[in-house]
Amino acid sequence: MPTDAAFDELLSTGARALSKRYWTPVSVACRVADWLGEQRAQTLLDIGSGVGKLCTVVGLRAECSVVGLEQRVELVKLSRSLAESFGVCPRVSFIHAALGEVALPPADAYYLYNPFGENLLGIEGQIDHSIDFSEARFCQDVRLVQGLLRAAPSGTCLITYNGFGGVIPAGFVDLRVERHGINDLILWRKR
Ligand SMILES: C[S@@+](CC[C@H](N)C(=O)[O-])C[C@H]1O[C@@H](n2cnc3c(N)ncnc32)[C@H](O)[C@@H]1O
Image (cartoon, rainbow, N blue to C red; front, side):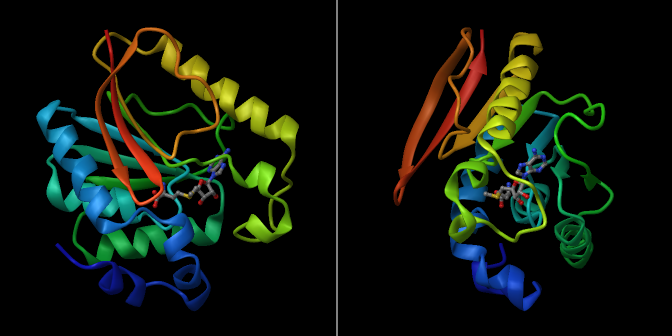
């Protein structure tokens, strides 16, 4: 598996500077891929996929199809080129849209790396200033995810890394919990 440094080398200078804070480390992404394999997940949707690092690592290590949803067009371009470089296209693909703007593809697993936190962090904590952030938008995005999870069928998997800012809906049971640095990686499955 390529190292974090190998991924960083393929990013723009700006995106590389954000790596430690915003993109899932390779070691964590490998755990995600292994858990998806154990659960026999066929399709993963990463909501807020950034530079596509998590999607690409899962594509390299697990057999499932992976879709990343990302609101920033520059990050989507980087994601496509990263996935292309590692030869995981078209099994790994990306949608340029904000959550709620487009119909989501069917998935039996979801990944959330605290995607909506930027709404609450102030200018210092934001990836860039191209997006209008607000507490109202944070609440709306959290509600959209909760609605998605409530509507999901039994057996749906959810993997959270540092949460997503909301309460996980009833019916999801935590099967695995690991601490990676200061972040919790949790595998949930709907009863
Ligand atoms: C912490 S990064 C995680 C990136 C990636 N999932 C990973 O693990 O490497 C969160 C990403 O979510 C994106 N994002 C935040 N809110 C979003 C929304 N409502 N719709 C789509 N993307 C969103 C941000 O632009 C950012 O790239």
